[in-house]
Image 1 (cartoon, each protein chain N blue to C red):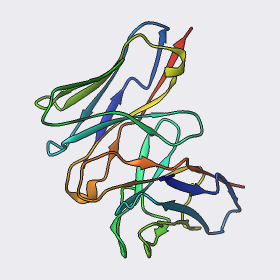
Image 2: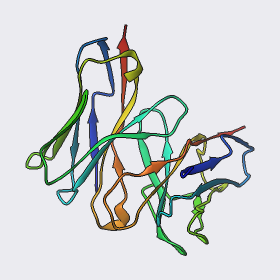
Image 3: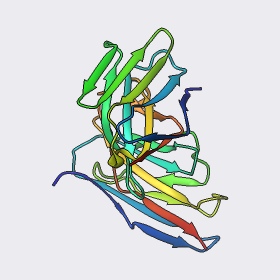
Image 4: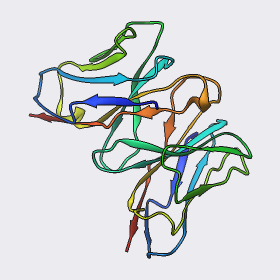
Length: 113
Length: 113
């Protein structure tokens, strides 16, 4: 079945360093790849997304890259700040089957001041 | 303000009792989803609905039931058949047929006592 694998499960960096989270997906028909940030006790919020017709997208300190051939996509956060500390989820979906999002297991990012 | 509202935020249930979690949205979205979140397991899809009066099982539907009588509402009932119901439950919505952002509610934490 459809599956999204996410690594690492935890990541600790110093403030100002970069953080990279990686995901792989199994369904080659997937064409939409969002990243969500979840703070403690709250619902996830979208931080960036990418569609299969592009290879990279940036929004200030956040970027996402997509390799369709390898079925990999990654989140890059530069110049990390303590407020970036949260759980990050990747997901994949396709237009069919109700557009359901399949999520990775999550990465707990800790940015130490 | 447009958004998606889950209630209650915290819910306690005795073993053997059914309980219903509320999810309401005023975003005019056709598609709605219920996810369950457990530590280290990401978000797992319970049920989803693409349109009123129609819904499909997700990956972990056993012990749960839903209804979709109105576009705005997608309540989830956790039945006594669910053997391990203690978890954080998240509701989401998206426009149907478009691969775009899913909006999440703030979640309901259910604890069996």
